[in-house]
Length: 376
Ligand code: FES
Ligand SMILES: [Fe+2]
Image 1: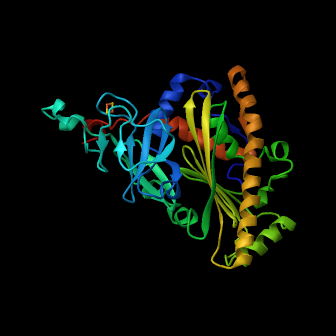
Image 2 (image 1 turned 45 degrees about the horizontal axis):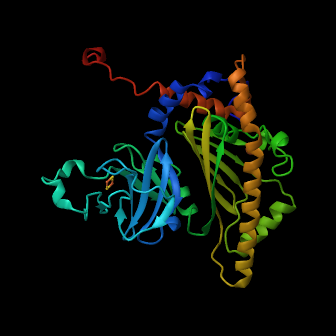
Image 3 (image 1 turned 120 degrees about the vertical axis):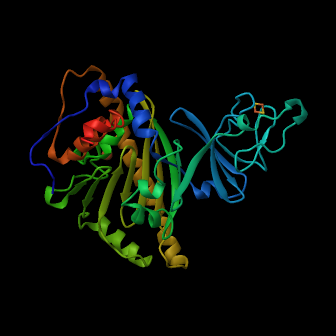
């Protein structure tokens, strides 16, 4: 059931998908306060494991310090070099690649070559800049602002569902990244509607669900879509395998977006976490982490089913992302030249809700009224 019965206005103008000014506003008001899923705990399993990212123009490093995950700006306070340029690795110490300053888990310096040359020691200006890092299930999230709510609060009310889904009966199957030649909102909005399915996914999804089999939920920070998959051979096979793995069959597809940029797609056999990051006004990076059902049964039969489910899910998920990827460049080029206002159908109403959120947040935090205006 859709919430709206008539078409809706396209609230964002085409130039909001191309302009540098809009890009800056979004970085500041949408992305700076947000939590960002970047990796799995399995990517950083051993002490000394590290990963580096360019996250929203900020180079960061996440490292396992004796089984504790810490995130820092990947910039050395000595003379500004990146600590490392490697995308991943394992080192006994966190040591800057340039002159070899070493850092501890709290970001303070450890061993410094020829330390006497730096007398008197400037303690305040020799620490790494830390960032908050938290996990939901096995997914590692980073936040670039010092203040703001915890990850658990930020994900409320879906924390209870997401936390056991990324781990537990589900195992991490794959992570992959793609750069797309379009504004990040093009990718996000595409994920918020099923209207494009017959045209873009004629062989994978095939048809969109009827309105009677489509539930939309629109809240301040989330939009959701639920449907019951068709009772076809693929669904019946899948349900059979889920039971063989000792997992309950719910037979529902859930798709949720936590504004601004995280998408969770849940079926009985998969849990998929997708995220899209702006890399400029006209470019973005998409990252997907796929978890597939392992269930609770052990033995060679259950193992075989798990492996089969994993490879089919991985293949289909890649295929769908590739199919969506074929249209993004064309949408972006259209945005650059469009004289139209645009229009949003009832099936696409989650997009309207998302656009309301973008405009609302990009106006920035409202100023508090003066005391006398409050009637005090
Ligand atoms: S710049 Fe890092 S040790 Fe010199
Ligand atoms: Fe799609």
